[in-house]
Image: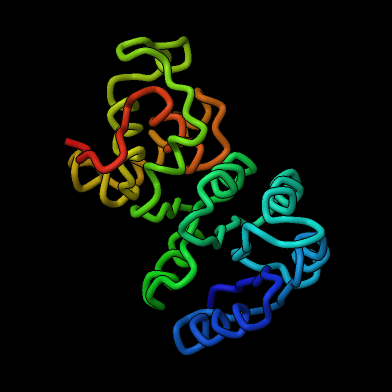
Length: 220
């Protein structure tokens, strides 16, 4: 059972999320917050596996709430909830440490899949707006340039990073490269350590920033 904390200033939205994230589907909504200032206390009280966080809220918005939460040890992952035109806000959420984003109004199955994916330690970036969001804050070097961090990666680690940037999960990367999931996980951990990355979303951002991935492009 995946324990979920809902953070949204609109009761109607929270009610809709509760109806989707029901126990019969493997979820338990353990608490709700009306703004970001309530998140730290709710996380301490309810110990959720995932925080489903609205990006735009009064008092304390989703960016600041995510930044505060991710600064705490053992903080649960944050899945940002937003509308289609929130590119800059959502980019801020990712920089603050969110594990991904999902659009309001997506089919119930997609929301459930997103929560499961983030709870498992993976990233969830809605493909319909991923490229636009990343372009908001990209400051990419010239093609072909490489800094010391990229140069520290082995050829296999670089290959894995490219596939992370393309949105593949560890299992998908393992199947594509004919490796075991454990081996891929080891490569991912080495990549995070060498590049000083906190989570998979930062790895995706790094891949885009360093021209290792492109919006809408196949990993091939």
